[in-house]
Image 1 (cartoon, rainbow, N blue to C red):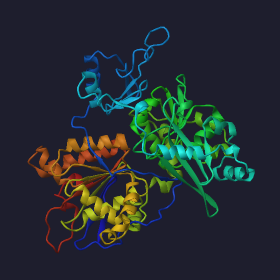
Image 2 (image 1 turned 180 degrees about the horizontal axis):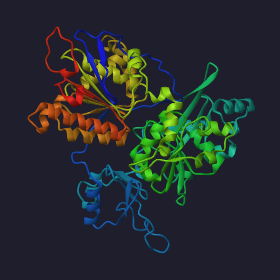
Image 3 (image 1 turned 135 degrees about the horizontal axis):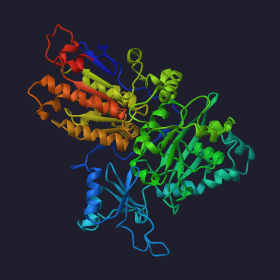
Image 4 (image 1 turned 60 degrees about the vertical axis):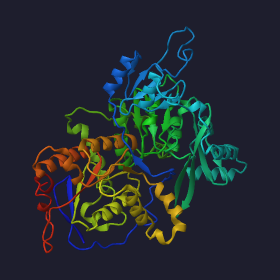
Length: 582
């Protein structure tokens, strides 16, 4: 059986008593609803690879200067003259260069040319500038890209969908307006955003157009279903998010716009734009992730307001996304009874412009007063259960002891060899991942294939080797999870591991990192012959990472050898003051 040894906040230690851990494997098929439920598809289970030589913004600047490429400093990107665009494309009617159309991400070095729509990695950019390679390294031209695999399906659905106001049956129009909360959204607004309705699926269809609105690149379908006395929503994206990223409403943005409001749902963007007249964009994956590939499209704005939802999870996501976009230009609408999500505010008769004026700055100095924190304190007091963290769906004892899984904390998990640490942690993490927690696994002891097999078996709640005909069904569902794996195996440097974790937080908005286990980093550091001092250093690095990145880190540690008749104590973890004393 497993027991929890209470320890000081924010570090927690889980220890098993000697013996076999018993419990029902797998997760319940129906998790608590968190509408709308997002149905994403991925080709392969993501494995996280870090570049061999991570690039820094200083190195990018030095490279551009060294090759005589003019550039300007931006919020999250560097803007430069593009080597991928024709000279005629870079000049206006007077023949003078009008803008820098190449955007280079300061963190990853990935680039996007707004003029030619070429994009690629930092290595691709260097190869193109230096004339290396076979010509295939000159960026990926979206305008000349082959048809993506779902293009026919996108066109077929789009052609079958019709504008909502053109439905022949007015009762059907009224029913759709009621189901989707569109009673106060005008036909002009739906027409401006090119929203359509797919009658066979009873779904709204939101288009994703390529930059400049030159072509249809993808769709998001929102289906409404009656559920008891209420309505539940289910989203389907075509193509899958891993293959294409876009912002709903992008073609309506002009180059002169300096302010934008970001929402997590397309219906909220409709309500905001209609009520305030401000430019609005919808994040493709809601509060789950802000892909770095979209940052260049947000560079032009001097003020960005996040209005993602009406719960604490949306508030936390807004603060995380603001860090990518430069917090100094970001403002957050705090969730509350008088500040619901935009569509509900419109239907409830609220003044949306007034709510936007109450948005709080995302950036503040290192020293703050309670006056700057009082709204966040009120938010936590008003949402006590959400502030306690995300509850496990199948571990009631953990909910009773820990209250929930919270960001910015460190959990240390230990137990004797063969006691089932990895098996339990995989199911513990799978529970959270199934509820939308973006998870990164670092398994240094067992291979990713073996770990994925264990987790898939737990997810299916059965032995798939005895029912291989069901493998594809469960594998497809498993691919939908926001789950990523580091490709490390064996001894690794703590610096390399932290760099990989930092990359994952930035690119994939990871909220939970599992490290199995700490011993595979201790022998590599050679910081000290004292193992306790080395362990204290590594623990301190992980704790700092969890705090700085508002990310939960679960760390597996092997205890020292104890007699079989003795239970594990906190002193069993090498007697470390930093691990066992906090």
